[in-house]
Image 1 (cartoon, chains in turn red, blue):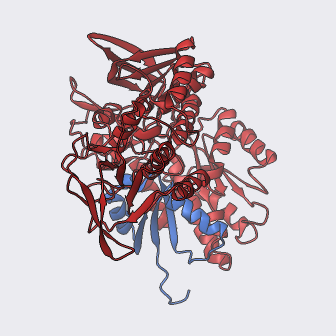
Image 2: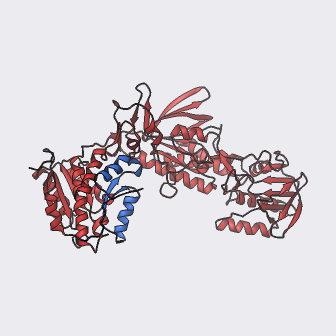
Image 3: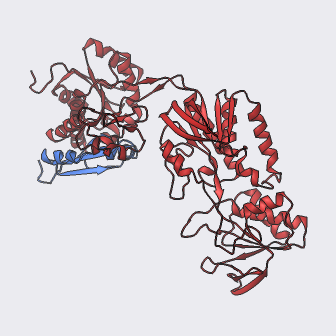
Length: 558
Length: 67
């Protein structure tokens, strides 16, 4: 018998023609004969299409008939077909993780189309590597978990309220936690909202009313989340309200903590009276408390600077909106907007911009290297287009300052183990593929906590985050992948190296035992911990050192 | 065989990016020399330096780490 063969390992190799995609470029008979010579291989079969119903059936029939305990399919790519072949194994009673693929189409026949002999040789090597790895595979299990079908939304602004209401309407219990005494967030400070030109109270009252009347919603105002433990499907959050603490169970968490306007201390003699921010202007307008006749508005105060490089996105349209309100209330009010670039994206905003010009709002471009100055009576600035200094008498100066991160953003980021960027805004899992998710499962984000957004965007994101959360909450049970890390507690020295590299916050340090432990629900199977572990205690199941060494050896043996 | 140097190169590829890239090269029928033996990892971050050493020890002429 074969020397290096492990007696109890019987590998079945299924080699796919993929019609002519593989068979047209490689010597299939040669591959079949070669596979038969490999250690541990008990059975080899060529299929026209292994992924067809017939091909799958042949795997399922061969496993019991040939007494196979490992299966290798040499065909296309595991990225598309591994799940199909794994479930074929499972249906035949074989643990699906005792399966391995050799990629001889996408990474062989298709890229060596003019080198039949050398291409066939590479296919042999890849099959030998797959067989060698397969021989060392172990049974792995997916863990099944129960979950809580309740959600927690942190932040009761328009984004959080929209998310909470959407989830409640889908039938899930929701805890809405707001640190202020009333729901509504920054909308409570505003005067008139775009593009409907309505007071925000109408929107806020509508949402609050529907939330209060909803039997599935528990509103916690004046409350903060002080602690969260657990993982997707099974969080336990501690909510503190005055001196009482409540623990709630939830399956998903939505971060909707919003943002706050920057107070421009030290800029343009800001005093909150004659020199105010645009959000303070909104509050004054709401009270009908503005008598000024010469109003200057300066854009990009404290943003797009060295300290804060980002554009806050909402200030241009806010300035234009308020300029129009002034002009419509009293046409002889003189309004000058000092700007760097007007960001009026979207059809309605473009129209608003034109309307403000028709009404006589003056626009003056300034150079950030020569910003406007305010002496208490007038704004003087170098007019970039006219190429000379100009002086604008001013009895109210409005500073368009950016929205900045909430003071507790970093605390919440640490608590939920989700990242924030250099400006303190929460960082989504992927800018395009996961815009409302975090890399950590079960935690989602929306609204200004993510980045300054319009009300419409905040609502859309709230609804989006709710539907992402519902993707988890709607499940009967959660399954983990079998490809996850594990740490041997007997050899782990508790150096925390793995904790530091894990991007998913999936490793905990068990203090009383002095060892690290993988949370298999959160683990995404990247194996970073295994590569980092100095004692070799951490390993990635399905990609162990022994399995990869076996592949390396075979890569050189043929 | 010919006297031309025919190297053996062991390539490590991340499942989520470069392994997908290698698949895409196939879908696009981009041709390259068959000197490569590719090993799929779940992340290039799981590559232990000893994998590279082992490949050289076993006679690899080159090691390619992609991710």
